[in-house]
Length: 86
Image 1 (cartoon, rainbow, N blue to C red):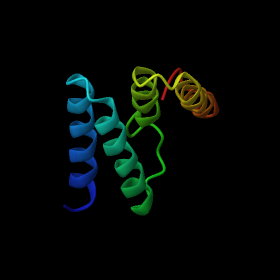
Image 2 (cartoon, rainbow, N blue to C red):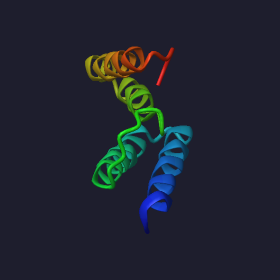
Image 3 (cartoon, one colour):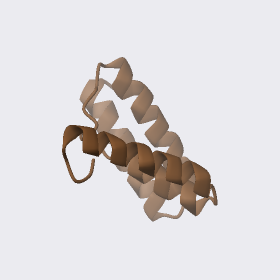
Image 4 (cartoon, helix red, strand yellow):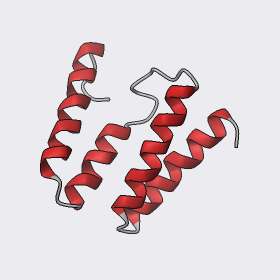
């Protein structure tokens, strides 16, 4: 898969995993999305709210500390961009 198509597929598939109560698979796809997006020069934190989605998945897996850390990072980025959320 190329560029934007790969990013789109990973994002949508991650949401399907979360909807099917498979948070680890959703987290794995979002981490692959981030890796791919960064390799393609993606820098816009608002292109996809992956931190919030991963935080929800980590919370579902019982990793409250990891979830809070990502949510705090998401909030910090939104504040630096002057937006209410990422």
